[in-house]
Length: 333
Image 1 (cartoon, helix red, strand yellow):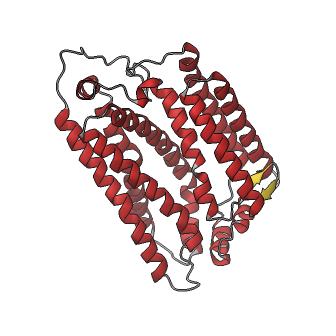
Image 2 (cartoon, rainbow, N blue to C red):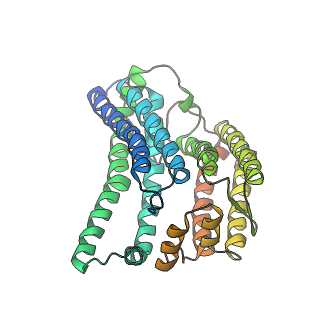
Image 3 (cartoon, rainbow, N blue to C red):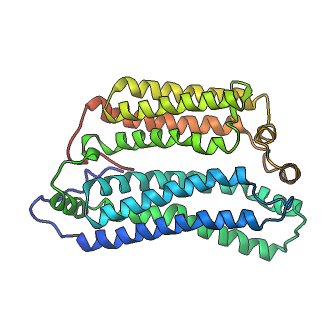
């Protein structure tokens, strides 16, 4: 993710303004597609027959919030890219690396869940021939591969170029807020800020929260989420300001959260959690018959914690160095 290997002379570089405009319109188009998903989801709810096993309003509200955030983000970054703004390039680069990391993990999980997908199809009373299953899997992984790997890879390849950075620096001489900390630190700050938005989708599930062996719900869950979101927002600000205590607090918070999840799912199952989230009984029955939720949650959490701690140690090197350059010889992936 380091950009230190790609340096360009401040006076001699290839102008990439046309590329910035093309990629900017590309991002705006992605934002438009994300926005289009919102009315489509609302229409799908309205057209679903009562008791037909389709998505409920509670389940769709969080997804609508996510698509709204995606739409706004892509459109803003697209406009910023067209105008060759430094902040747009920095944010696109950081978010694309985060997008790629999530994509790699998601595809790995899909491989693990692959046998359970066929079980889920069978549990819904549909028997597909092996050839049809093969076509479905190839189509699914091809689509997800483009969405999670190809698209962020395209953005990273372009926006990490030294001449793209030099073009933005030349056309946007003003020091922007994204220039005040290294990109890896900025990525952690944005990650914490995005985590604070969890309160939006949790509201759709009555603020259900697994916490050290118990499940909070309703008013108690809401109190937890409001408090946790406030803490995340504060840590996001403090990390951006390069405060080392915030790094320790973030590490402690996520380790505690991981331990809480391990303790909780050593005592209860994912099915218990889904019941507390008020999923329709017909959906729960189908999921249970397919064995989709029969996964080792504590083991998965341990793996995620190990990866997160490694990421945190990498970010810490930039915070300890105290580098707050106007350039980003720091990294983004």
